[in-house]
Length: 466
Ligand SMILES: *Cc1c(COP(=O)(O)O)cnc(C)c1O
Image 1: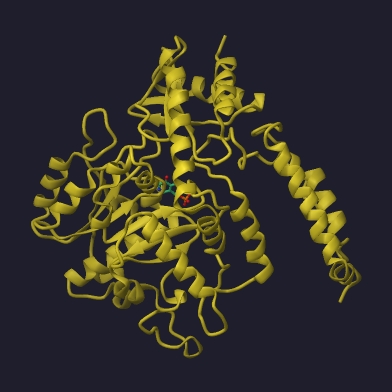
Image 2: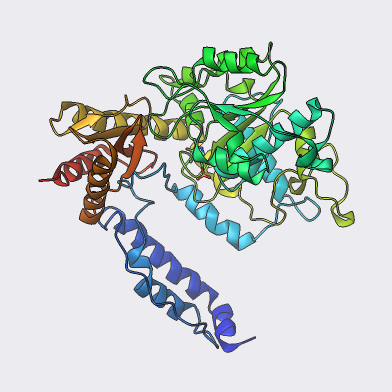
């Protein structure tokens, strides 16, 4: 053992204590430090020959990088859809590395059982029946990828072939129909060999991001019985709109399609009684995507995918090797998702659900909705801003009043967002919605309080162009 490693082994208590103190300092700074910042690229350091041990590595990390990190775990980071980490989830994430389990198979311990218990609790949280099986993946992109891979296999079944065995060349083109799909659907189509062009975006209801059911039905009828994939959206990123999931589910009586529902953060509407009707019909799905590192507030990276067709999943993802054994009635996770070895991704979720329960999750969701409504009320009452969409759930989508269309409007929004960022009080992201450039403020962090919404509002006003 080299001296640096031997010294850290002997001083492990000091290493962890030191990390604890540093972590507490970071958490305490979330209220006061810049929420995001522009950083100059660091001159990359060359590889160390001997290493210098943990303490000096931490000092170097703090000096060169940590100060330039975004406070994305904090209460006023409203870019993208970004969750934080509740205390139990954060502590559990440390334990993940401490135990360093590989839950690929259950041959050596109970880690996969913990994942199964967590998946069953998530099913309950979202009101899904036992017909759904689930697995952990890194994020909604991978969850969508797995769901569409199952859809591809299912379409193959309709055409009398197993795509997992014979490959996509024999499959031919597959139509993927959706109203306002997330960008990751196109990426998944590309990765699956179906191609981005396979994704057909259908007409939306007027002024909405929800698919026009009549247009969907007309397209399905036009396919004349050809099996296809429909991606229904439960929570779009700009206006958090929801397709009519029950109506789409009902179409399956007349048309053959695999129904994948992207409910990355929209699934959490099920927790808020005032919004729960939006996800009526969620269990009509053949596959469902739900992110956990967003609204559940577990650290990156965690999402879940559910399906009713684990048999298809085994065909696609089965990993044959003598030492892994044949997948039995309760298949090991190695046979269900793209990963082979991986971390015990379920543990932070297990702790969060155990520590805070359904009520704790519901409280976070309802507070975020309230914060979004509060900011939206400011926007609506202001002569300087205008809403681009109604605030349906946790995202406020707005723009500068009288903002131009096209490149001029884009430039104005970009510089507004950068001024907000550089002032350090809040972080929001630009977007393009129904032909206009605008700004999104997404509330999904458990720490956000009413005072933070007021701070965000002041920061937005202060960043207005002169
Ligand atoms: C965030 C999001 C995704 C992608 O999620 P990642 O976790 O970043 O991979 C997909 N769909 C929707 C609706 C999302 O909001």
